[in-house]
Length: 588
Image 1: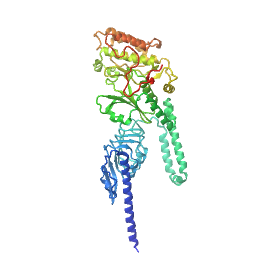
Image 2: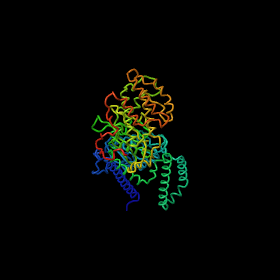
Image 3: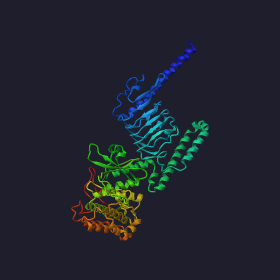
Image 4: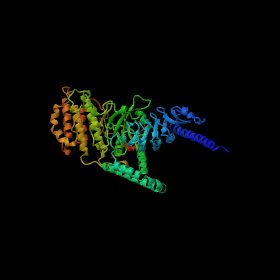
């Protein structure tokens, strides 16, 4: 018979051996899930799982470091930064339970961050920056007790960031994730004012009756799950209702998720009949993953980036990424439908789009001379002229004529009013051809019964009110004054039209000094008269844009030919890959 002490020793040895085997299998499963998920190109070629790994050969894999505990070795560090990895976030990574450092930065990892990452109790550093991650950051990550560094910069994450209560001093980086909010960032717009109170109350309640909950958890598990789903649904409904109160056009947000997804697919298919759908990954590469170095400008609804086509160093695009895809659905519809369907030489060319539940992106031809606003000095700037000097008088008339032609075409041929016209919305091509942009506030003058898309937009956005055309005429008049003075005007609302009209004579004394004495006086005065008519206080006294175009065209005579001056019809030049059928003609 084996002595008792010997038996205990034997059992202990068997336990340790068996435990070590289980631990190694768990670590191997973790590493396998990583390679299978994000290594389609076999860059981790030395991760060979065909050999016997129970001797802990996996500790010699590239990027892997192990922690030795007695005779056991467990993965403590995964440094896979900039390894060319691509694919969804590996779901089995929580099996590396002793992981302290996880660095997956500067790869092409996509999808949402799984909540299981919060189970890595010993995690000290988590670096996920420079990928294509989207969705919300799991709030449980904030409970990690040892975390010291958390970096998710340069992704496409959204929602409220976690509050790190488990560790007092954490180095955080959320840069270039425009959808994130809360904690150290801007407050979340849809956050209920009493949420923190109820969170505190819930935590206190759970702590006080934890023993009761544990006792009855087994018997009431189905009931608790049902109640939790119901509570989450109500909370989600309340948040969305609060958003709708401030954005009444977003009633579509209350639709069930399945219907929303169906609507997105239908809308995407409809838009693809007008303009090409572009792969989001290609847009990321073209904009250097929406780098701040590629930013062209910031608008009220999104950021515009300069994008370079692959294998072409001479052709650029302008990519507009909307800030919050949920709040700017109407703007996205208008920005795609109007320039996508109604093509004209003086409308900004829309060449593509991308649409899903979380992203709405518009792709335009790049206008190398930027916004007209950029060529004007601030009205309070008393210094010497810089960029405004470059605009010779014929160029200014050329811009005014093209802008009048495009706006007249929108009013008369398409029954569309812009309602947000300013020098900021006028883009200039390399030849200073003006292009009207920013149609997010546009409206239709009347409803076209046989056009389903316009009928839907009419219901969401409403038809234009009386005086809308005259508002566009006023905005055009302000732009004329800016072209004449070479300065941006502060008074750009219809409320200030009386002041602008009464002060029209003063504009003779504030004509851009660069234009004086060069033989343009008569035509400058002619353009001032047109501008004064456009900003008259009485809506009935303001001219129609067709008449304005005719008058400016008379001022242009003698300066040479202008592309398409003989007609207000749309241009027949189309981007490659876009089929022009009946849909793109203006609706009458």
